[in-house]
Length: 244
Image (cartoon, rainbow, N blue to C red):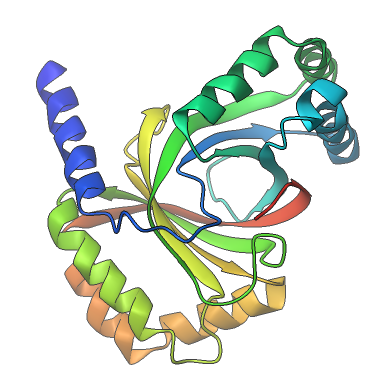
């Protein structure tokens, strides 16, 4: 176990060291992500909005959103909530308020009443982020690919070159990036690739174009040498707070 742990830690560290270290201004370093199954979506959304609008939470201007999870294969999650923090201090403050505030207590109580079934939670960091157009508030649909990367040092340049090569197409993503998993029940997942769009139609046009492109045909067999595909899915934002 310890050997596997240190190998995993080395892989994550090496990937982070290769990061641009110059993320766009609106990108948050840490992302705290919670995926769950909700049989009453409207009530789950209402509970999340009530928590974020509580005075002690709203005053902090935390960035957060709730989204529907679609086409995620074996994963039973129907929805997710993510909190985005620009610094370790902001992350600590957000968790402290969730645990100690009256708003946090009421939110947790409501989640139990709605019989929410958690499927996964994790902490990720942005290793790469690129915005070509729009903001987080504009790009409300994202496609995501979960991977187990065995050799980050060789995979990252391949993926960055491939992503850059797609920018010339009209169906290209408005924004894209890569997140490294730090903590959580991730199974074999070590990294997450994402591409963002202003609507579902744009996301589907991207899938049509990408999988049919000569760039993908060249990239895919090379990437397979250093990564294993775990799952893919779509996120559709339902409610955003303080997007930047």
